[in-house]
Length: 279
Image 1 (cartoon, rainbow, N blue to C red):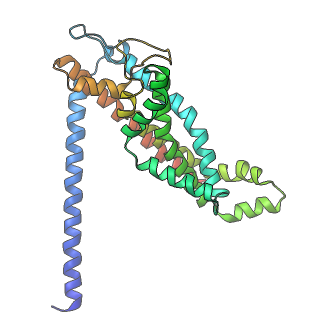
Image 2 (cartoon, rainbow, N blue to C red):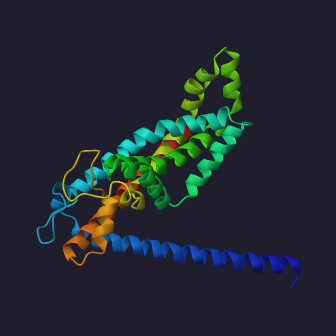
Image 3 (cartoon, rainbow, N blue to C red):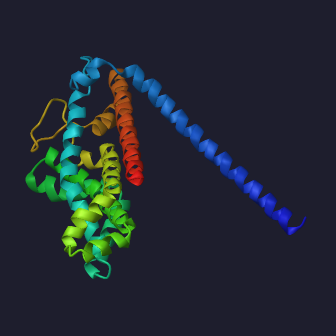
């Protein structure tokens, strides 16, 4: 067997192994999604979206948990998105050789890979314990910490992809650095930045561990940010291990709702990114 035949054989073997593993992963993913769809869809009803969580035997739904998740994630986005965009802009435009920028980038990379339960413990020590109780505000802060590093990384990467010719042309016209950033660079990178924000929201929406240490959960309606507030991930965590069949069914329904929501955000982010590329 000559060299060309050996290389062809090795190439065929590696392609076969890679294709087999890809098919195996796809089969597992399809199995998981099919199980989730069957169990979750059978548990869906109007009461899931209209009634709050109730004690076993009294029916109930997930309305308060769904609304609580939307409230906490929404406030987290309001906190983290502007900070993330500004920090990412600083790292891309003004932090090339700065030690401060290097430290910020290192901390951001650590936060990106840090387990979310550590973020929950951090916010518990920083907010929950000093203020004497669990609260929706603490949950929003924890989710903001989850969202922040994703937005920072996405903004920095997208800003670096903007052609330098745009910067030079704007500077040549007499624009200040802030005008170049706000009027040229952000507009050129807006599709990628929005995509990063949407992906960060998708990540935060399914987080359970940070909320267990911060907002904890609530079986009734609550819009007081200083009190515990229900959330869909925590409700799923609590109901999935319950001995009551109706609560287990609600856990499947909640898991399906979160999965569909995250899938929708990913689809929207891809559409936004593809639309930005066409522009």
